[in-house]
Image 1: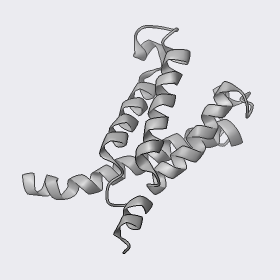
Image 2: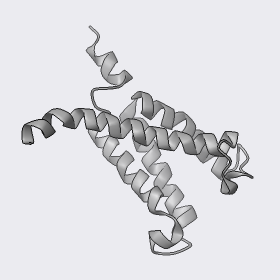
Image 3: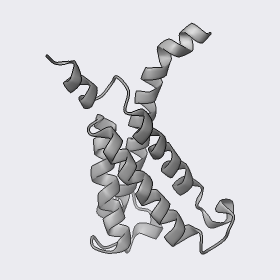
Image 4: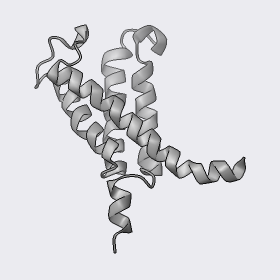
Length: 132
């Protein structure tokens, strides 16, 4: 089992990076393009706080999916999610479950991990490093 996990680990890191980027990307699309329609994002304007967050999620989530500048992108997204938690969720309740802050915390720490670990072997960054 150890041999399998050591072989699979880098690829699972790439999968984690891709899925995290995809999920953040969908939030950006919903906030900026209203697709799919999400009631709490219905009134978001591009230069509001939520609109700027949507731009970060759309652009940087896309870069995370592609594995482009993973460490810096993930670090910025980690900060965005920490900011989102303390501005939007923490004032509602100390308990993340009651303030709907669970996702923000999870995204924050997954992105922080990706900032430290990198993007794995499947991505544009890794492809660029392999070329002579």
